[in-house]
Image 1 (cartoon, rainbow, N blue to C red):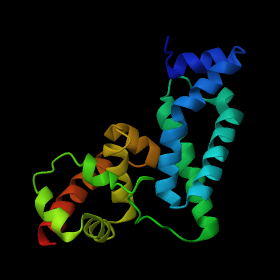
Image 2 (image 1 turned 90 degrees about the vertical axis):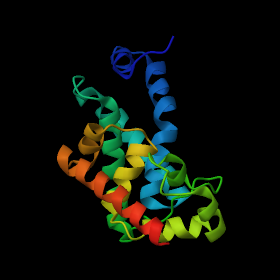
Image 3 (image 1 turned 45 degrees about the horizontal axis):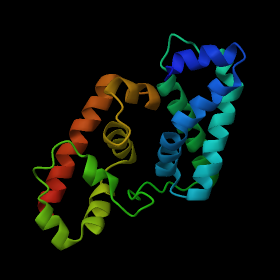
Image 4 (image 1 turned 60 degrees about the horizontal axis):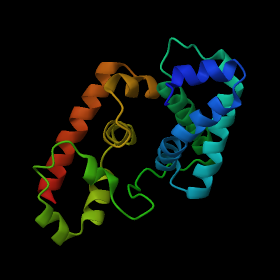
Length: 186
């Protein structure tokens, strides 16, 4: 039987160690993927992901159970990644390929109409996407990833990024319009 995040937290706080393991298991891959997009390095992403779960473990008793656990844990991941980037002073936001070398943004855009597969295959989809994505500001790229890769709602994205809901919606709309325009001109 699958338990909700809220029930797993309640069970863990009541002494069920397996409940925390279940939380880790359900969030490990999404958090790692999210962190990897921020830092662009596999080893560093593994270390940061581990640090995120340590922070969650240490602070779970303080978590407001009336809030959404998913947005809370992704906020911790975002803040931990930003702290690491500040220490490193480099922001590698341009890599949009997963471990298999597939470009995850192309597969997840909501309206693929302006991106005909025949044209993109001929001109080199990876180079084109990287060039186009590099023209977006990092905050807009992150909104697109959270929306289409991690399937966050606009409200969840706003909570994770600590921005107003309408700002997130505007960034999303502007990013899609610019992507379409840039791909059309490529």
